[in-house]
Amino acid sequence: QLYFSRLAEMSARMRAKAKAQWPDTQVVDKLLTIPEETCILVGTLYKEMKLKPNALDEYTKSRSDKPVETPDVLCSEDDSMVLEDSHARIPLSFIGKDLPRIGTLVSGIVVAVKGKNSKSGEFAVEELTYAGIPAKKHAGDPPTSDKFMVLVSGL
Image (cartoon, rainbow, N blue to C red):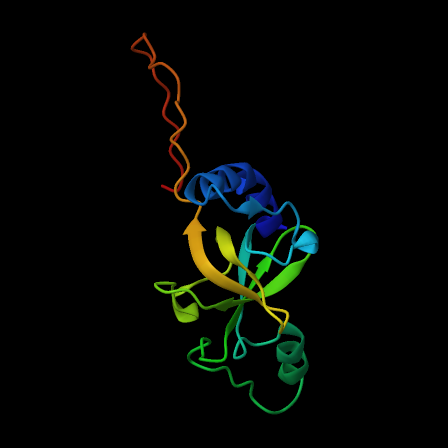
């Protein structure tokens, strides 16, 4: 749910940034409607980690007499990336020059990717852009009086 709310909040800004960066390329509204030509998809990255423990398996094994073994490192060369929105998810393959390695990416990042569907069912990413840091919100005018209240917790 966190990823969907983050995408909903950042989607409009990400679409505008993608359209400015790649003005001659169509931005797709939903992952369900990807055309055959090169296009732009906006969504949230999800990293599928093969070594990540399954919570249900962990619970089942913890009830047995054998100790539960967890790997020290959860990332591997077999990890893959998926782009998802509120309608669908599509596997990604990174074919473009200067794209980040999958090992350097994490789940939950809102991105725009430019590329096209491959015959294998993956979206072949040629270019990628991040949403960036949101603009700083103006907190309002500073108080004009010299009376302040401070709340301190955790002492």
